[in-house]
Length: 353
Image (tube, rainbow, N blue to C red; front, side, top):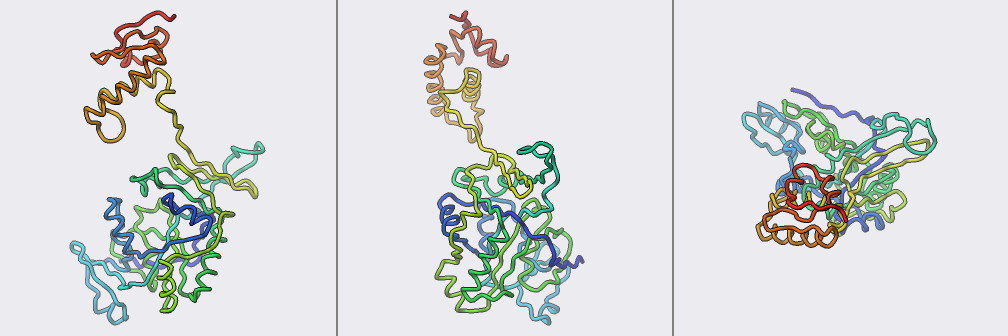
């Protein structure tokens, strides 16, 4: 059985990333409202959304043998879950609250020739892959924004100070990166509760997660925290936070001297009535064959879209769409631009006027 012990000197993040619904972004940046939830909520939300789930979340022991007597002697209040021919052990708790971020630490930055500024200046570059954003945002992507916390040390200092003011003790606040280990082999965490919540299966290591856990023993603190709907109020953090609307590609960072540069890909949006002829015919072809991205269209939806494209073709290019799904009066110069598969849609080609 693997025995897991955490390294207290594990590198802390310099930059944090949170993906938030648009309605919460301003409160997060302008008021510093940070919401905490119970780890059990993560499991429920992931199950409902269909996201891949780490079933070992919060598990401090996974074994092919039962260890009830041993853990009882240690005074651990646990629940046991049968997992095939093995058993998973979890600490019983109702008060633990957590908040998670993507944590980018210095080791993720590698030397590279500068793309910005002075030539031949060596920069330190890092990337957060598009797959990271995709994993959490398969649904309702248009309602999400990315918030970059450009100084995690400053942000975490604000978190600690706010919790101290509320009566939380230093030993009840946990600020650590997540460790990624192979949880598909028997293991046991030697660390006391709640450090099992800093262990995650290695298949999720691209998440590079950083967690803030609160395990306070004071009833007055919990009464106050519950009245605040488990929100911390850090105050305005706009001096260290930046909001990005889209995350359609890798997020690129570059450190040059004392400057941090970042670049987040944004989609190029062009109205359909402004598209070039070749692209417009391509959309017509995809529509007729019901091959547009997303869910298949109904016959009625196809007719509506084809009718709209037909209007644009005649208005902008003088090209007529015919009932046999072919194009007439196509100028020769535009015809030559089309790939062969689209040229076969054209039954009447005319010389340019």
